[in-house]
Length: 235
Image 1 (cartoon, rainbow, N blue to C red):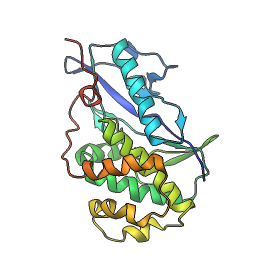
Image 2: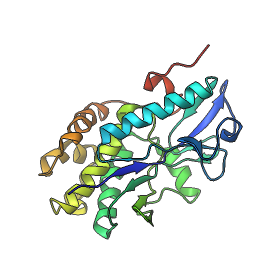
Image 3: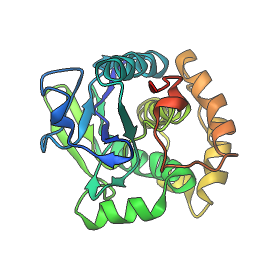
Image 4: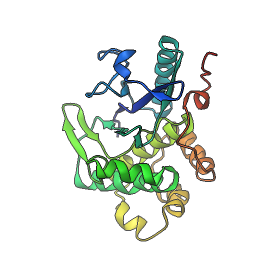
């Protein structure tokens, strides 16, 4: 089957290490725009079938935002400077209970392995990011549980790849991801996931390779994301 992926992950802005409201620098109706509260920035790369293509679009938007406000630093994660920030992910297909459960299991496992758990707990206590959080949309649905995954191109690509594979796993391979996980440690589950999938599109191969590398690293979520994307701040 064919469907499109999209997202609108959020970022916290800092200048010289201090929080600054995003609306001081960016406008609402822009690819690098504002979240509803206007204090946090939001990336809007549109839609694509390919996680690789969507990651590339995100890079281009981050480059644009850095060029527009070169003195800013940007932070991803779940909860930064007293703000809950999300990584809402969009799908141009119908939501079902099985698909939402699959996303909870697969992307929840990724979060267990790489995210800052204290940040995640703070976001959940603020009322955001709980399992099974989604909204139906005119294009399909928005999955609202993940935090902002923009720490690096690697994290972004892996998130989008696993999101696509979770949906394909349900619709094409008829996998019950709740049963597949069944008590396995999250990292063990993810390392063996590719062996349980029958349908792996070509545009997901790179993300699966990156997943193996990502699971072996300890990530620092308290850093400016721009150097990770190869976008150096001006002195």
